[in-house]
Length: 329
Image (cartoon, rainbow, N blue to C red; front, side, top):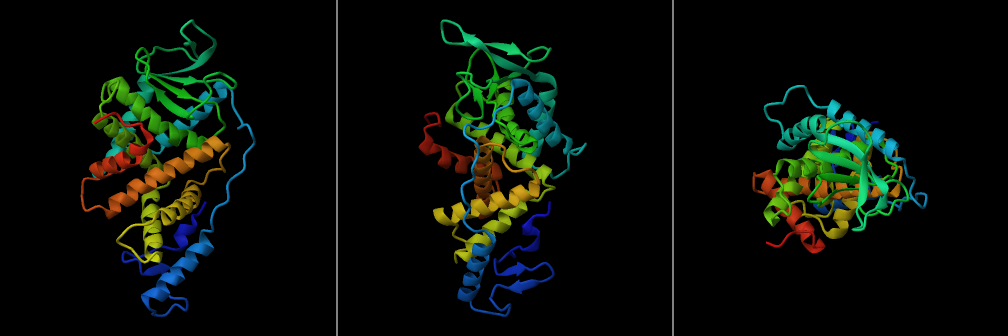
């Protein structure tokens, strides 16, 4: 599916737009105009192209799948992402792509699918039953069946158990594409715990390093499956919205940033070319990724620091600080 973004882009200085055949000044009549006229024209373009998005409606409760269906879905999604990896690394390959390659190896040698049992022991712990034969060598992907007491909380999360290295997956319906992309983030954490890169419990520095690796691998995956068009799309939208606001070098307000993320969701969904979200859980997963990934990419554009990993680390720390998730300094 063609992205509407291919028909319009903003130049380096934020002054021009591409109408599909040539660069034009951002004035209403296509001639040279004042910056004020240009900005008003940009605002009108944005309002027409990206109207405020209405909340999506989904069945209540969310559609759910069986543990076997979840296993098939996420395996297919992960296979799809990994199949896009070039056979050999490029010389200038992003570090996130390296971590993505490491995940492909980890997946081959260290994962087993399992499901929670129906009964809990006296300590409230539920048994875990494997869904496939094999040897537990690095991590368990454990599905909470529909209606199970543990089928609540985040759709995917690595659990801080000392006896098992496990990723819990809730049984919400999801498209194949987003099952694969979302799984990348949590698999990176699972691998970090399995290899000792992220100990239990981690220090604040180790926690932030783990989040940087997880988001960088996920961004690399999205860049991979969209033919390297995701990051340029984020950068183009940032230039468009910041130029329209009249502050191309100062960043966006909270309202402007929120509108940009809605636009990014439309453009990125078009780049990916997958069906609409199959559940409210998937819709939330998509928007959560677009918000953080979009922020990390635009922070890299704004920053004078060439160390992109350090830039992403600082952005994540700022975002996570109010949530109470960060370990004490």
